[in-house]
Length: 257
Image 1: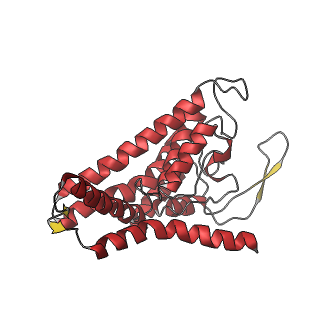
Image 2: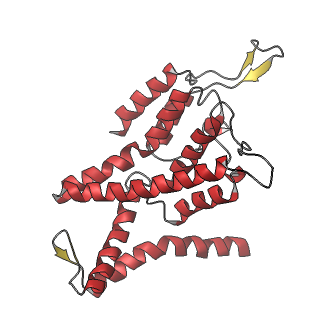
Image 3: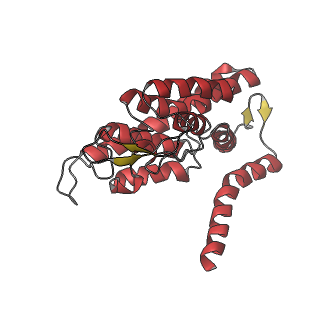
């Protein structure tokens, strides 16, 4: 599945002007002052890293670089590729468990969280900035892409555990940067990586069903199965807490060294 999708996306990106060759650096004489122009298999690598939610970029400026992301359409395609497979997996999950409605419920929950964060980030970036006395925060953004596209990419990349960017996240306003950080702290389960967001969200579903069942005085059930044994809840809590605990423990160990 990944290979044909990557091939199609790479061809679409090439049609928009994304570099795709195996040539070394060349001298760009089209400019008034000649400069060295980078080349390489950018389109194929961008397609792979976006569809696989791997992140990163072929060029140092990532998808803010015009050779990697030259047009509004290429910008849309690269953002769309981030969520394509993670979003589709919610429907796949519904088919697997025999209830498509359950897949749509999870999709809706993820979408509501994503829209709320993206709207909050956009509001924070286009309102008056007292620190710089400006009405729109253009710091760290590629002007040909604009604030809205930069904010949307920032929301998608942090929600989906994708490391690609088309603007500098650290240059966002405090509220927008905080909301992007919230996406990360949620465990990147708002669609998340390929498969990783779905099983992360399912852990929250199990805990929610268990707590809600206790609150209404009914035996917690999900998909016709009871969730009432201590073992299931302990494993769910462990799955939620272990990633954060691992980061904190190894982060402390690295800092101490």
